[in-house]
Image (cartoon, rainbow, N blue to C red; front, side):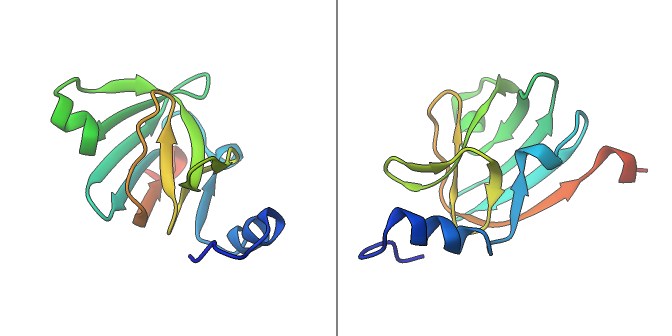
Length: 115
């Protein structure tokens, strides 16, 4: 997504058409598998907008699983959409300030749809 020469309003409008998981769509027990350009993450929704995260940066640190929050999805820099948890083409910023690479794909398993 090329951001240069666009207003913030234009960038946000473009983001509304991206494949996205919104914070409001997630329930305790839902699990997302997120593939970024560099890593793979497993993000399980816990209570109070917290997430149990493994994979990627967290695996390399060896502190598994990590309980954290998400700040939202970012295009980089200070532009962030706090309503998004995962959006193809954007990066996830976790509550501990870790920012993933750009998301290539994700799968959302909703708790009521699991066997």
